[in-house]
Image (cartoon, rainbow, N blue to C red; front, side, top):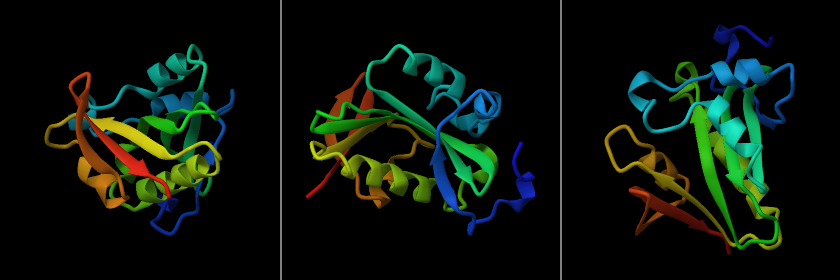
Length: 157
């Protein structure tokens, strides 16, 4: 299913693709580094939650033809704010620029909605969390907390 792990490079083309019967198992097998596992739910749990959420939008992140991550939004097309519910890049592909490029695609998707004014997410406020990653992409810590997690928000002009 897809290219060998070694063929994914920082130059790989990153795309967001629907998950289907042929890719679901591979996407479920992707995982973050062990020390990050308490910071993000497994992809199987996320996909199960998505099937019971009215406005869930989820995609696999691919580098060329290799699945490397997962993203899920709470994406009500009529709402001013879209929520980045889950985002992960498999441990084998982290720190290669693929996550940044995938999130740029997510941001472009959200900006395409006429009603969308902000994109928000939350991070666990502890070492190893992705707050700095999000801030480098333009998210700003709001000082708010939701269920013990720090809220970050990106505002569109």
